[in-house]
Length: 321
Image 1 (cartoon, rainbow, N blue to C red):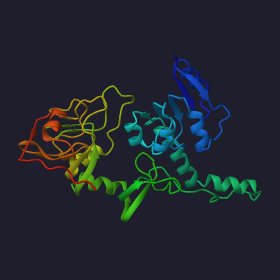
Image 2 (cartoon, rainbow, N blue to C red):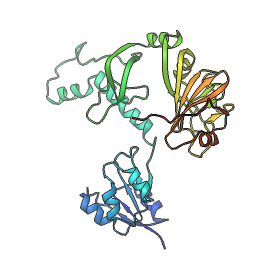
Image 3 (cartoon, helix red, strand yellow):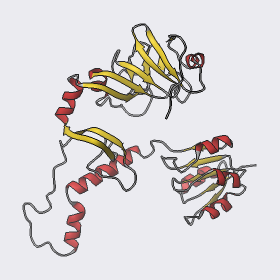
Image 4 (tube, rainbow, N blue to C red):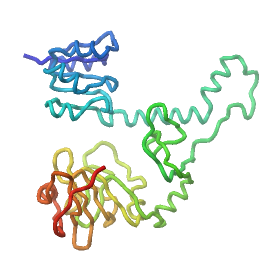
């Protein structure tokens, strides 16, 4: 007997057809935006929910729908889902990471181009019947090509309503500024990174070796050719490079290894690794375990690490908060 699931908003017919091969499906073909009580009513007896990023799933809703075993978001984000509450109740949670990364970047670039070239403004000007003749400076806008700038003091990513598409990161995602932030030309950015003027930098990583080698731009077998971008310049030009990453990959394989098997970003560049399990310093004698996450022991962290960890006496727990 197939499990029954609820598709909370209208989706493409081919998606419904695929779901119906495996489940009994109740679909919201009318694309009604249900109230919370209506959503709970529709979820009664359902084993799974396929929802958007706007429908909140919290502890009270889970308690009202005891047969629910999976909450699957078609959105990239999952801040509408109380993941700890789902975990406690054994409810699987999934989302769709990176499914819209390139699409969002396209939209961001389109908006930047439209703003720079005053497309919306000129369209309204034309519809109001105010255009009478061509003029050399009429809605010419500003050039975008070659206008790469850097930000020193970039804050978090912008929330909805905060977006300024003149203020984006390297992936064209709107960001914010912290007090004292400054802007500079691309040439100055390269001068800072390649000239050894950065005292500290933080990068993500796919692998770090016992010698401090870093791989962070390409996973073998992944789609596309990858792009090393400015990571190589930052890794080689920074006095103190900190790598922040999860301790293990999604399949459980170690990311702190004896020797990197992924394409290298830079050799012997990492000074400190911060993961969800530990803080590790790269020293001449090897990888020194400085701190462990609360509830973890040095032995347990070692069991999750391929490279040998050096212990200098008792290892304290991280101080969080």
